[in-house]
Image 1 (tube, helix red, strand yellow):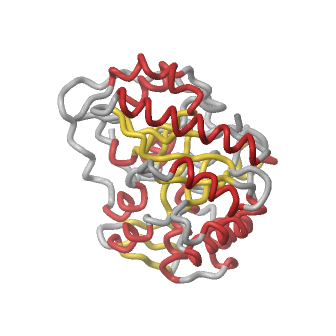
Image 2 (cartoon, helix red, strand yellow):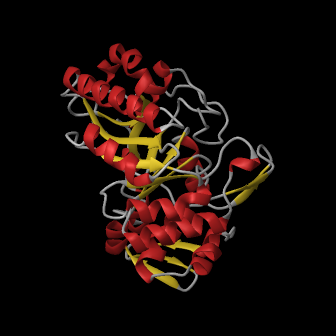
Image 3 (cartoon, helix red, strand yellow):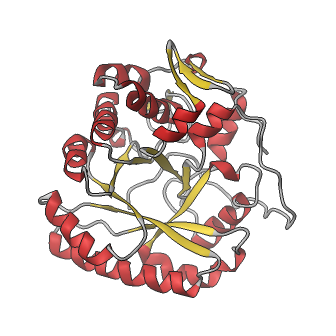
Length: 327
């Protein structure tokens, strides 16, 4: 399985106590709008590579923390549903587990169909067994080779009766073309933005093309891997420059709001100066470009979330920048 992020190994966090914890209300509202439910926790994936038990224990603590406003789904491969079944007692109606089901990677359309059939069956079974505490809200899976329209038709036939947000992954160099093909389908696009080697990181130009295409065609987009530091910076562990989640999410909402060109979007993606990113009660500003807090929330319907094997590093880095007041 390809890596979901580039953080160092994590250990399980302490479980939160049973009392209700007040949400952090000190961070700037514009930052909260940009990052609300933005992190799909992918602790099972490299380089964290946690076992399922510790990863779920982490998530159970996160959903009870004051920072839970940033938390999205738990990324769980369909192939691990059976293993997860006895571990889900940590969640309840007040502190539910929201799952993004991850379908297996295939190359051939016939295998794609087989894996979709398995996924549909497994999703229905797990949801029925844990209806009060577990909600499978999202499905993500790489597309096989061949025409996108044919794959979408197969998916509609097999997943059409499930209430899921669906994101299809394709290589970065095929992102714009795939996004155009997804237009009007109701499905979104998943872009891989890094990994554990420098070759896994797409260029700012490739990400810019994907963001502009998503805005143009009104196709939701999510991201995975390499995005748990706020601002673009060089990281020795991968011997390359890693993209920042404020760069990517911020460029996404601003490009959609102002109908940016690929060149303007790429310029923001390449900015490594944290002082360029300003958040307050009313708006988010990058250099001379602004978007209101209310409009950020609207644009986030398209610029949705990012998969990260760490929920701690994004918060720690935001705290170091003075942007975050969470626990």
